[in-house]
Figure 1 (cartoon, rainbow, N blue to C red):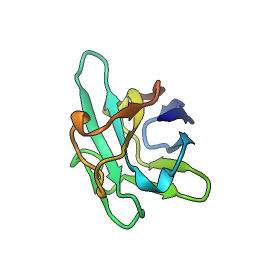
Figure 2 (figure 1 turned 45 degrees about the horizontal axis):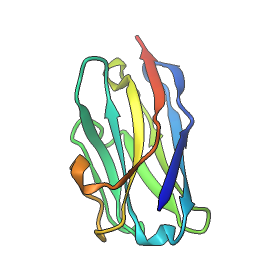
Figure 3 (figure 1 turned 180 degrees about the vertical axis):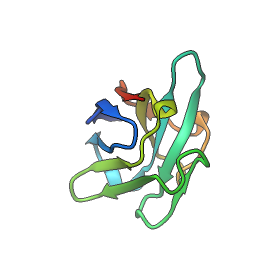
Length: 125
């Protein structure tokens, strides 16, 4: 069983940066692939970024590639999402997710068993 808690959301102007963090509670954080998803206003939840168990493999949605960076610290049981050059279309609730089954982080919601409550990110123009 795992519990996830996101933090770091807020209001930022376009072009600014935010760093989201996800704290993992449970056993063997290093045995979970981790991902970030988001749900914008009136939209379906979508994949943002994922990172494998060791942190050596990452993947990104095309819409954030080059602007967002996912990382993890297995000693601190945390996964982070550094978001730079933010755009109004990045406005969304951001969710952290954990997958105990795969070595690499997937891009589909159904691949993740555990989810946080989400943190709101609002980018003003």
